[in-house]
Length: 277
Image (cartoon, rainbow, N blue to C red; front, side, top):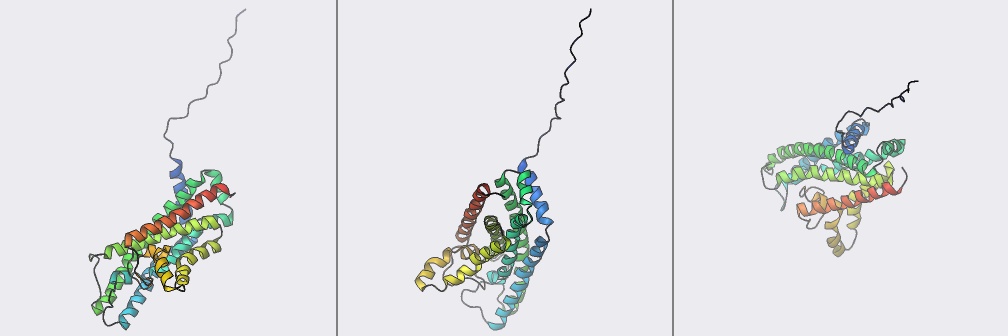
């Protein structure tokens, strides 16, 4: 009688060795696909240069018609970028819709199911949005600058991109719009409703400075320079919409604006973990 050997156990073949791609990169690529497949993104990116260059050119032309000589403290580079006022509205909508559109459709649940690390999802959205907003903002600012200087040159008020502070104003306009988009993203994540997020961002950036102008003069002087919009726009220079009074220094003001935005994004990240999708 011969002994039979036990059947050999099937052994699982090891998976081919490979280096897995980091989750953050996959999530970022997914967020890029989402952003560029939403119709509102293209409208916002179309309105950004239209507002920055078109509205800026109209304001610059109006200045040339009504002012034969430069006013004291006139900033030709900053004034030509006054169209940022309309461009920022498009960026606010883009930043809010980047996340509230998913809450509206319910697709945010699928997003968090595929990537449970919610902070990574928010960071990926922020990275993609900031890159798009900054590139669109800088390109629009360059167009607005050169169109504005062509208009101002007729009265001898123009400047060049190499003049002190001119390049900073142009790049600063793009950086301001990029950080503003992140602020809008954070507010949209906190509020989760498109209308509410846009209203909160517009109220903070546009309405709040107007309300402060109704305060007693001593209060205005103490508060105005520390408002998010006034601080962030200091890097652009003196525009049509610069608040009265001495503004903060360009980069110190922009740093304060970044700090406000960081606080909102941190609050948004904490809220993502504490609330259901």
